[in-house]
Length: 124
Image (cartoon, rainbow, N blue to C red; front, side, top):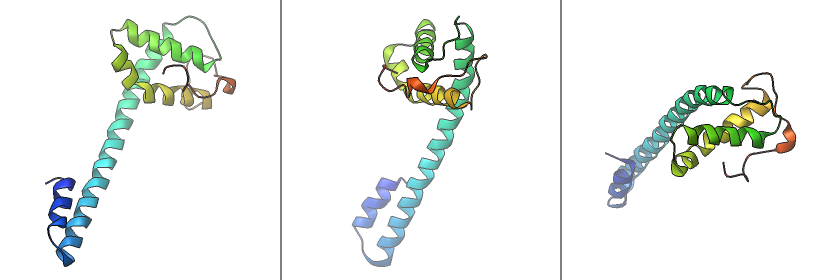
């Protein structure tokens, strides 16, 4: 039974049964978000390995986050991802660039400058 079905059933009743159904529905929703977050982290960790391998093939040691984003998008496109698939990767690309800028992820010997800021306005 899904959370939405539980909420619909709760609307059809009243009293303590209604409260129990609502509580169960909210518990289902919370659990679904937790599982989704865990899955997102697993996808990100897998993407990091791919991003690092893709960046390793790019020559140059730029300190600009925009260059890193461009290189990542270029690698993804070269590997056959279409524009929609690349757009779906946006949050992982953004997180990777932020992780590199803050030192949580290391690529080569470069450290990104904070002057480039977030990679929000460049299509990634």
